[in-house]
Image (cartoon, rainbow, N blue to C red):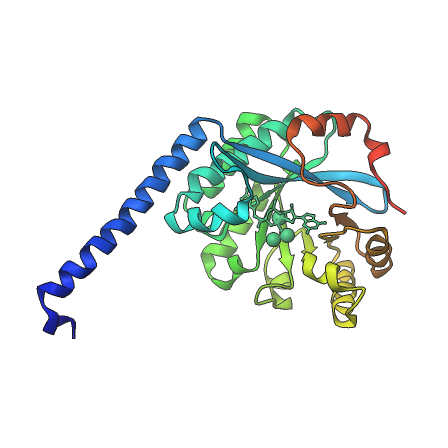
Length: 280
Ligand code: C2E
Ligand code: MG
Ligand code: MG
Ligand code: MG
């Protein structure tokens, strides 16, 4: 069909591809400008160790202060940026910034950083992490890298090798959003993880849906038998806290304990630590 249309088809597609390329270049330029102009910031959300009744660490969550659009959540720009490969320089910045900020906290708690699958598969990841640790002086065991199951879909040697190299640096690996991907329990056996984060969708629904509660309970049991801490994500109410506690989750994260906050507010929270934790 294309052949029959001859040059007509060619001319029809050319401007389209051109427009795509231009949009991509524009995004690249905007992104680099935004990075240079300091439009990106990391917010931090507490992760509570239920047994100790303390903040065990904070998850770094990326925010874009867009000059016209205001505060843009990551769900709106990370998927776009991932398609361009620009997630790698931005992701490197996130790792560096999180390490730098956490190194200045008044307590030796951990900082969790999200890695996109594209970033995980990029060649320089291990070196970027190692450099960020060296430059910030952050103790490696204070850095936790959150990856999702989609990273493991490419169950190849490189994935396993990268995970091992990261762990050899001394950093910890957490499985994020567990239960939402193509979950396979064998992932937990064949890959070296330190922590399981139960996706917030199960926590949100568990009071109305027995199957969601059953999943939360099974993952908590699994974590206990594998010696892995389990974090319940998206805890918003005291009832949910009681339920995940009864289910045997070791840690909790969610609006009940605190929303993601800019770094300057965090320092105050850390100074008055005990007062901010409301474990029942
Ligand atoms: P995530 O890693 O699963 O992070 C948790 C998300 O749930 C955050 O959304 C957080 O604000 C939100 N959340 C926390 N507690 C509650 C709660 O009690 N209720 C509800 N409804 N939501 C809660 P956020 O900050 O919009 O981030 C969304 C996703 O974007 C993250 O999901 C993560 O996958 C990605 N992301 C964020 N920062 C980065 C980053 O620096 N790099 C990469 N690659 N991805 C990032
Ligand atoms: Mg996460
Ligand atoms: Mg999550
Ligand atoms: Mg998520």
